[in-house]
Length: 151
Image (cartoon, rainbow, N blue to C red; front, side, top):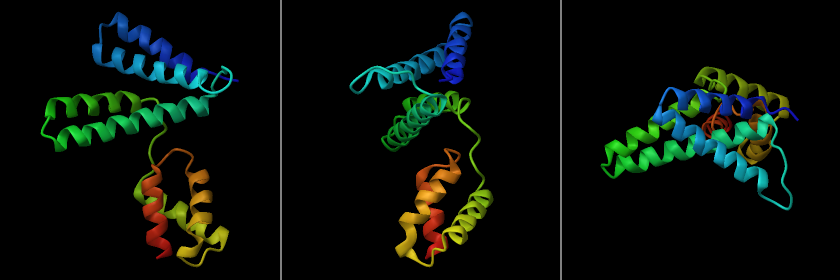
């Protein structure tokens, strides 16, 4: 299994530590800890593939986004800014997100491929669309677009 992404994260952590970049250092340590926890979870320890590491990074970025919204809603702007900054650091390690027009075209293609005709086919379309998107758009965005086109 390749661990190029994990190696890149470790190398960037070393660089950030040498540059005394506190935000990047803390964020990379946090995501590497989450990756290590994922590797030892379950019955036996294993090495994560790049796709699995990317899923962990995506999950951590989503946590930061949700925390920023919660802090912002509670009037704690300083913490919200910190969470957004951490999410920005993690975004460097994720594939570029699809634009709305590209997502709409991809979903339309999946709908024609699966032969879906209404909301009753949403599960089948979501399964195929999620596989086609491959982490380049959040599930909630994909679901909203599928609902819009099937409804």
